[in-house]
Length: 374
Image (cartoon, rainbow, N blue to C red; front, side):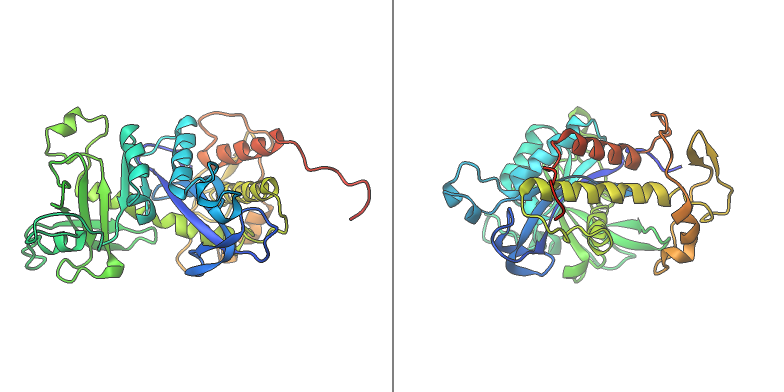
């Protein structure tokens, strides 16, 4: 059976944007949209997602309101930056009692002092990306960027790795890759410091841009005495690379909710209506996981119904490139919505959260009813 949320998973913070025409829809304005890679008229949301090596599902989503949409612009007291919204999402996940090993996010959040400082002050573990060119003060002859610090780590060959440690990354389709990781020394960062700077790459000799990560983390080094005194459990290089590697699921999740479930295909204008649409899409995504992992005919073992739930061996994930119909999709479509299952250990995370999302919608006042046909 799929596992409920556990402490080896991560809380992924990210943002996504989509084109929207006009000026009447709430939160829409010219702003940078990651989906098109440039500034365009559209809407941006900040999201949180829980993930481990097996499953990933959305938790919360909030729209970002650009300064141009506020009466006083950048001086408006209602202005909330994306990192501010992200802090709220972390707080909401903690209020739910959701376990996770660390918060992971890209450099938009990793280079925001307020976001990192808030997590540090709340003793929330994190693994955040920074740009390779992020500058820091130091002596003229010292390294000034994460990339320069990584270039100073000794390396000869895989047989003589110098200061680099081999890390095996295992992917869902079964293949593995050998990456190399190292703790870097740079402007207050280091394995003996309260905050570490870690580089992970497929090639320490060239540090290819597309295959190299630079990460800051407050997870203590396992060999440091402070690790035993910290409220955060220590982490070796393999653990840090594993945690940040789980961030890829947020990109996969966006593809699924946008390409299949209609994330950006709403035709409503108000803030409340947009939020309700996004919540329903997240709910549908969670139910898709629940149904897929219980569908009959996708594993070698027999599944059966017990108390309204489909039980038995969990299906394997389909090979890369296969379509749902190749994996018993027709039978899955007929399969399975359990009628009023009893709450308990057998009710896994995706289903629990989908029910919570629906409850949130029910608690809100319904949209005004129409007195005549539209």
